[in-house]
Length: 269
Image (cartoon, rainbow, N blue to C red):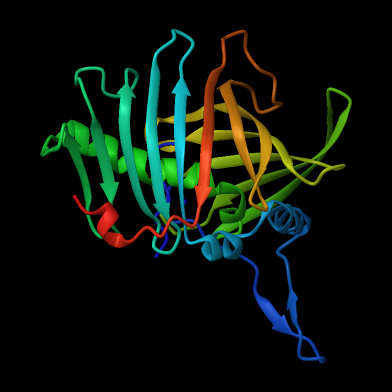
C-alpha cells in the first residue's frame, strides 16, 4: 500500500527491503537482495521514489473505472502521502454501489474508515467492507511503483522474456509478512530499454484470485516530474502473460494536481 496496504487487489502493509550501509567515504550505499530487487529499485528511481511523493505532500485527481458492460465508477480522489490518508467522492458508482443514488463519500483519516451517502454517515457492514477495500486499494495503485520498495517484500528474478518485439526483465514480488493467510503476488515486466514496468501480473487474495492471475497493462504520463501510469487496463491472463479473449477493464486518472494544501481535517467524516 505503519503502512496500510491493501487487501483485495493487494494484501496490505508493504515494505522496503534495501538495507543501507555506509561506505568508507561516508556515503550511503544501497544494497540489494538480488538482481530482481536492484531492477525494481532502479525502476522506482526512474518514475520517482516515495520521497518525491512526500515532497509533494498530497494529490487530488479524478478516478474513472469502466467495465466492459459500460458501467462506471467516477470519483474525486484525495490523498495525503504522509500517513496514507485517503478520500473518495463518488459521483458515479454504477459498478461498486449500484443500490444507492447520489453522492457517496469514503474516507480514511489515519485512524478511522467511514462512508457517507448524500452527506449522511452510514453504518452498514457491506458498505464498510467496500471502504476498507477501496481506500487502501486506490491509494496503493496510485503509489504502487515506489511502494514496491516497501519493507517486507521479496524479489525473485525470473529471467528475460520477449513480448511484441520488446525485451523484458521479469521480476516476481511477494510479501514476507509472517502471516499464515495468502497474500498477493506481482510479476513485473520491466522494459529493458525504458526501465519502466509496461505490464504486470497480479493476484487478488481478498477475492481468492490466486491461481488465475490478472494482467495489467500501463501507459505513463509525466505529472510534475513524476511518471504515473495514468491509463491502465486489465483482464484475466496466465502466468506466461497470455491474455484471454475477454474484454478489458479500463482505469484512468485525470486532472492530477499535487500540493493542494490538504489537511487531516479534509479526511474527517
